[in-house]
Length: 115
Image (cartoon, rainbow, N blue to C red):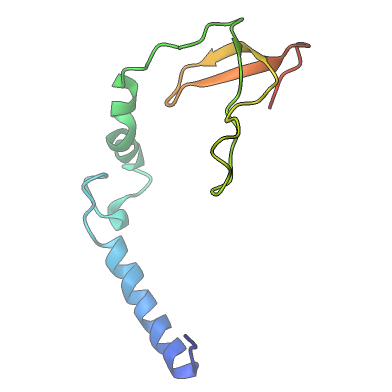
């Protein structure tokens, strides 16, 4: 699709309407329209969005510090199915970071942190 000058002008005019409509529409997630959010009520909006995150039940860590693990390989879409999905190298869990989802920090067998 190619745009000529007239189409571009039309799109720009409609873009302003789109932005206006977006900013003036009520969103249930923040319990107001974005145009109503200001520095005085931004804390209330933040709490409306994220207050429930504190009450989320976190899963216990499946691996303990010192456990030996392998890391899953990122495979391309059309990778052969019979090839292994895990690294051959072994790693040691150095920390379980309790967030959603759980994250593990690992070290190689020489004790060097893996990024």
